[in-house]
Image (tube, rainbow, N blue to C red; front, side, top):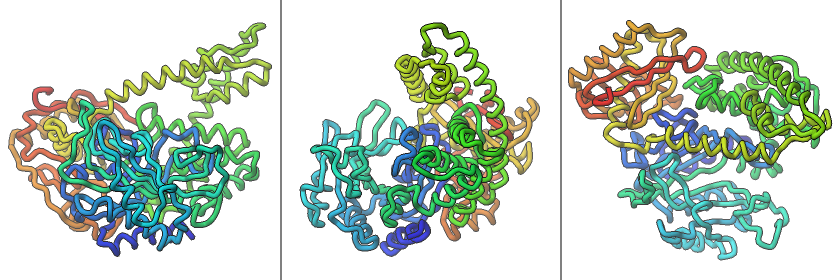
Length: 592
């Protein structure tokens, strides 16, 4: 079975059951500071899961681009990936547990013909915030699943969300495939990470929302969000041992062999898989319509780290220059009929990879000089201290194992325990910073955040009027205190230009214009001159927010009812974000 066939089977199954197909959203969340990347299929739908009406109705289906870095150290095994596709179906206040579970069961056993005895289930065990999910367990039992195939787990295993600090969440019922491997122990079950049981589908029953105080409150409308991992199911359907043995990866691996002159074997297996996974992820981030480029902050920082990890592995294989961009071309060719934005952004992808390779080759050279300096000063103790090892990691991107290899060549050991302590402290500091930084998000419908969403539309329109139509939004980050807006522009915006932009936005606020939301097809939105990230799916309906005389833009909301609610607008800062992208921070109302 090919990846195309699996996507089509899934989409058609749910279309036949009155679902409407929606396009994959950007990998870069729209107006959402709660996470750096779209990490799940439900993420772009948060406003609708919270009650907004979706233009296509209450039953939806899609396949969504996703990226997660939480399991990055696991990449290289049979199933973990950084970038992946999540096939999903949703009920927005329509069907619930009975219908959702029954459809999942039918698709797996009737359409894909997976033997029912190979399927295992987990459900929420219950705690002080929500009861044991006997309803889901009862549905599975009614479909013929014995008690021995149903497991109850705590929140860590069987609760989804919220994606950020607040938002919709609820108990889930996960579906596992038994690979046939021997149990690693007597207590081996679906929660075990030994590889016997592989999670393939997750049915999330969103009946709660978590507030800023940590309380779980019942939602007035119950929703269903499911996610079926394309790569994992594809491996099962082709009876191959890993996701890297499917048509999504075999052309990439073949290209790596061709360019490096090495063979994909037990000796090179880990390097090959990391290169293939990370370059696929980097290609999708670079090829996204939001056009993120490598940098030292936010999405650009994650992108830079995964590209540099690839470069290190390719260097060990003595790969020629520009190998990364050549491998990325294979990824683009393999996916462009499904994700056309990759082909549209082909030149940007390859140029950025070649540039980052050039930059990092110099950084690596500098880092090696510093590493040798540290190693040269070591005395009889033959131990590289944790501080020096961590500086090589933090400043030059040297992973611990890379530093260990350099040290071992001289008979020197590295203080790994001390390094891990410093690394843990670094992670905790980052976590605390993120907790403050990633406030708000799509689930935040507070009055201030809603007004700031509207302010981004006015700012975008004003920038295009002052600087020209080549300006396009490249990302935004909104929390209750301020907005941050990234846009395409290749020079610093002058003080006079910023003053004019600010004046246009304030004029719109003073005019007190009503914000009108209308639903229409993508083609109708284009014909009316609306701007925004257009889908590639013909006939798909979208929401267009109009501010007469100022702005017309595709968006999921939420927004103020009238521009006068913003009171005033003030640009606080204009800086470079990355190559060809500028960043404005601004505030409204009393904050201004």
